[in-house]
Image (cartoon, rainbow, N blue to C red; front, side, top):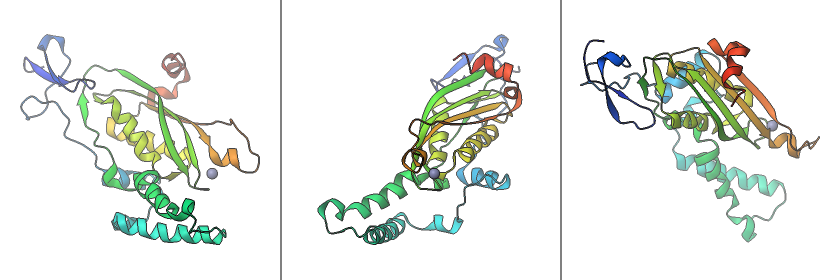
Length: 251
Ligand SMILES: [Zn+2]
């Protein structure tokens, strides 16, 4: 500790509070007037690059991302109209007339918005010298199965042990939302959230579990309502089931 009256941001209030030297919470390591905000913020392109290096990126053709939104909407509208016509539906019917445009906007603006690196949330971390454990349970998600283009939904549970950095709690939800907004398989969604949180938080000690319910299981073939798919990634201290159980299974 070098100075009195150091400031640290608490994740829930995001307001600076004064910390006395002898309490030893924060170590000032920057030259930015006492504001302890970490300067390394990974942008969407860097996140995409990290996932590509690890073979975990979704199959995105980069050049397509440069297309204007309106171009994508028009293309999908045109082709979805062809799908309806191939099914021998009357696309002049009032109930179907606007469907191709509705579907196009749904895909571009919502279900596939996480294909665009610019949509990756700004994940500022804050220093926390004392180690702390955070578990956030039941983060809802809604994604799209890449094999059938049908929704899969459920909840994500995230835990991490801080290694000098903490993340605003709502950012965990935003990271989940970003990666779920692309055609996915649950296992890859799980690995993407896990890998990116490890990078942002600069620690191996991350745990991500997803409980998903897949429409393609429910509506096709075997028609198994109520089936749940569980996937899990655990790193660092959370590889130890006893350690993990102390926190996760008691919640
Ligand atoms: Zn599927």
